[in-house]
Length: 270
Image (cartoon, rainbow, N blue to C red):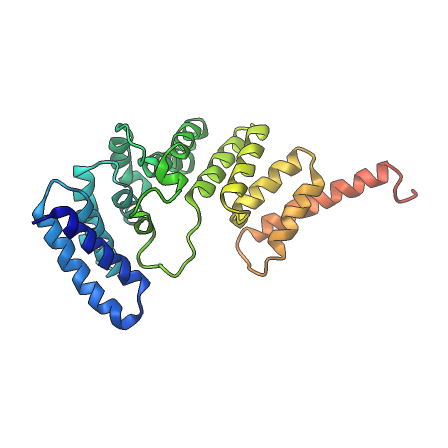
């Protein structure tokens, strides 16, 4: 049979599983699995069917089978962007590291997921921000992180169990992670540029934690107005998060510094 036609049809029905209403979803559900299994048997040297089977099993909360399918796909194509992201949702960063290292040894335009995971491991687990910076920079050069619609299977990068959640642009998140590394390294100018890129890539919709970190940089640079403004946006957003206490502290520090400046300049008539 024609593998490409079979795989395209299987991909279509998997996509329809997430786009359709409940009744038609059941039909697409069974058909997607059947067609993906058929495509996998037609050519066992192709990674695509195994990666999408992983997505199917993950959507059914069958983590063990999903993990096996993702690992099979990565054994065939170590940089596969769907399988890599799927495995990341299941494994810890420590467990994922060998898969990432294999992927980054390939000269691939879609191994950004692996570079980003290595950056997170270096930064969050190992505390090696200098090394993490290099990883995040590499990730941002990759097509799968840039997310410009160049991959027809890009929708399968997302968690299949939470398809109703509006996806956050990975490039924006990665710029934010890079900026946080620069901030911890004391490279405030580089951090500021990276936060600005994160804001552009995210259409201004940065996470509260990234906005808080940016406000901290502005506070340290003496940009008190900007820091207070960012904190005010977070605190008035109507949603609460554990970061709010830190945001309130940064805002109070910024406002206090502004008040001291006003006193020194005689604006209060003292």
